[in-house]
Image 1 (cartoon, one colour):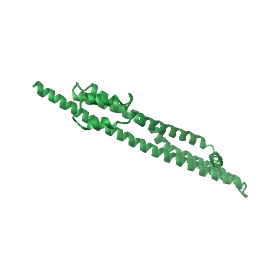
Image 2: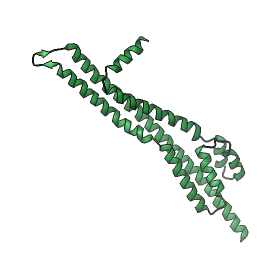
Image 3: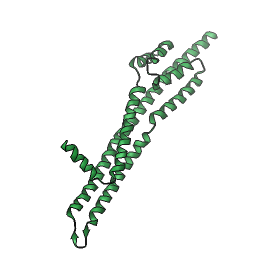
Image 4: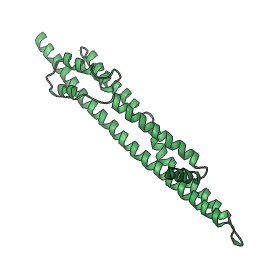
Length: 215
């Protein structure tokens, strides 16, 4: 409890810049929490479905059955359903519809990541502004006759250091979050593209076999 009081007092000493810094911290935490839930609920692929598609010789009914086991808003399910529902059409048509759906999914995954990227830049700058404000406050207490208020000078320096430290901390956490979720997004899209290629190849083989039989 004593440590908590000391931490709150330290933040209070950070000055007025602690208000926007606190807002940035809350925004960064909210976005990272949202992204974590998003990937956990809607961007996971079951191992059964992955293994099935990797066998190449799968039946479409089995793929459809395994896809339906995923959450209805799962991005992989949505992507596979577009391909499955259009598999009777020419493969170039199916490829185009799958590419459109992948673009929609990528947009959804990247939503609000720009805010984290902005926080990475804005937080240190706000901390720097707090540093300037604190140092200006400290210098104002040094008159022509020397040091007027030693305690006030100490408080100004403390304000400068706290604002800088908090701004850098928020920026570092946001940077790690931005890089982590950007990497997750790239991995999901790469996996989706790879498995989509498997499904499209299967469609092309089915259509070639149908054409051979017809000939």
